[in-house]
Length: 211
Image 1 (cartoon, rainbow, N blue to C red):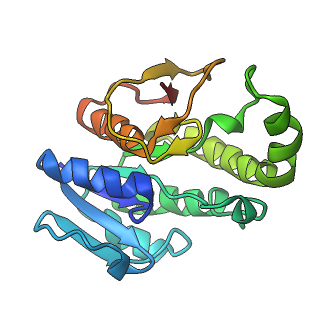
Image 2: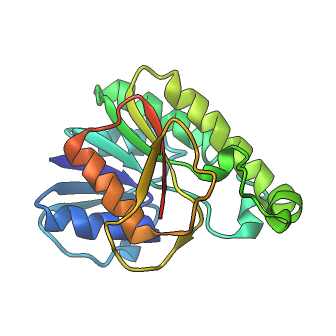
């Protein structure tokens, strides 16, 4: 399968590339700095661009069967001012998919988009309002655009992500968040994304994932 990947230089993106190539897929990866991707494979095509540039997205999506969007903000300070990364960038992704007639979209947001029962005091009253509120609002706008796009979408909401190992052992909840979610490794998030690319189990759904 030929897959377009956004967020290719992040931890989830790098893990997804490794796993997708190992499973025999072709990956077209978008990167602001292509030199940041040191993976060499005849099945990996690296293109320069970003989600604010519709023409680079349109070029990336040519000939692909599915788009996997794992781009995101790195760091609490950046999360305070998302700059429309999710809402505007996601809207550009949808526009470029319409131009290239690609229908299948997997997009990563966060379990933090909706309040959760197990949010502790520090997260609920300090971390979220001071650092993460604007980012989650931007993600929520992205989710609204995706669900009204007419695409065969799957929105994936992971919890806090770590650099832990691949286990393949995680829980999935469809159209709801977990009340007891636990930190998840980026490699396991990538594993779920690739499984969904291959098996197409949750089109039209928002899926929470957690250990």
